[in-house]
Image 1 (cartoon, rainbow, N blue to C red):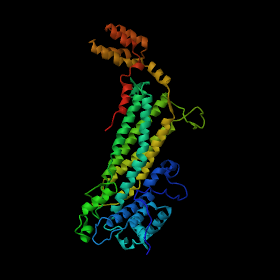
Image 2: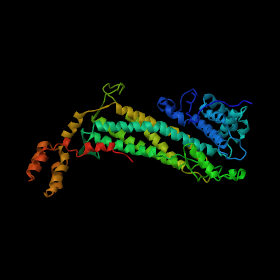
Image 3: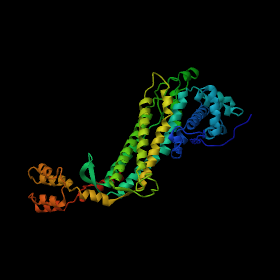
Image 4: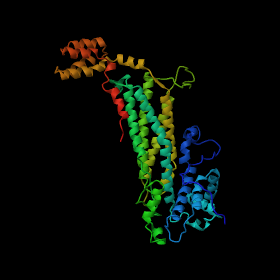
Amino acid sequence: MTRVTEPTTADVPTDPRPADLGGPALGPLDGRYRRSVAPLAEHLSEAALNRRRVHVEVEWLVHLGTHDVVPGVRRLTGDEVAFLRSLPLAFDAAAVAELAEIERVTVHDVKAVEYWVKRRLEGTSLADVAELTHLFCTSEDVNNLSYALMVRDAVRLVWLPAASALADDVARMAHELRDLPMLARTHGQPATPTTLGKELAVLAHRLRRQLDRVARAEYLGKFNGATGTYAAHRAAVPGTDWPAVSREFVTSLGLTWNPLTTQIESHDWQAELYADVARYGRVLHNLCTDVWTYISYGYFAQVRGQGTVGSSTMPHKVNPIRFENAEANLEVSGGLFRVLEETLTTSRLQRDLTDSSMQRNIGVAFGHSLLAVENARKGLAGLDAVPQALAADLDATWEVLGEAVQSVMRVHGLPEPYERLKELTRGRRVDQAKLREFVAGLGLPADEAARLADLTPGAYTGDAAALVDVLDAPRG
């Protein structure tokens, strides 16, 4: 009998790139945008799912052979454990093809994985424990753990770093532009001035808040049999504390144990995570629409690294296509995340298969989100602020100082301050001379009148610049 001697580690495996099936791609993520989303395919592809299934099956077999769970099961040797843990690491394109052949016979994906693992044990010192593979498991015991591991690594290793880098880009721009005055617009109308940096800081702060929620996400797993009762476990080995075994096994994979389920893990953690990722996407969508608008006002020039063609007929154009692409992909990903959130939290009685079909779209949802993040980052990297354009808008809207003037009037007890400023400014353009003339006739103390007379729209930004420093405060 061949004894296994291949040394390896128990590190969490990464997925091989899916084999090129040839022919045109049905969707853009597997065609036009494949390069951008390739890192996610390492974790959320069909090949990744099957590799994780192998990983879970193997780890359960290792657990049975090293923790004295079932009386009479012999202890596995170190070399045998190393060999078992090498199986998911060696799950390559050839293994994907072999598994597909087995599944064509079983017409059951998880059973095919069980048989694939058993084939690897034939002719080795592990042949005597081969039938322990998948012992006491329902398919969902393997699937829920596999999906939790896949999503966890996709988020922590791919999506979260990219999304965090984008938030850091926005924060960096906020600091660089903290002091640059800008006319604010509420309801699209000129309003109390702010700074461009402060408005970007608001968006960076919102993005980071959602990222904090994503970073704290729990990834739950269950391992309790066909209807979550440990019935088969108790029938075969009544003396074992099966909930304790289940908890130890699930947590050994780096997941949070769910002690009370039906046949499926309830997927509530997925709904919570996808809601947070989708909400990050809505904030990012808001950033894209605002920056797009600032570009249309001329506040930003798209000059750095812009070798693109903006129009086939108008050579002067540089279109904000990165932000438009991000918007569209965020709408797709947000829609998918919402459907996942709504669907995965419902299962008819103890189990139905809607979740199985829905979860195959997790990678698509994250793919469009990641693509949006990439495009937004590239768009931001190509922007330069245009101070002259911001200053021109401010200089054309002296009427926004009406708020300041009427506030000073209130403090000093002058009559009808709001109404008098309304008469002066509403529906009228007010220049510096007219405002100074109005202030001079109010009867304010000389120092207050002089201070108001010297005020300009560009200086009327309150604490806007200082508020950017909130981004440096500890979060939590």
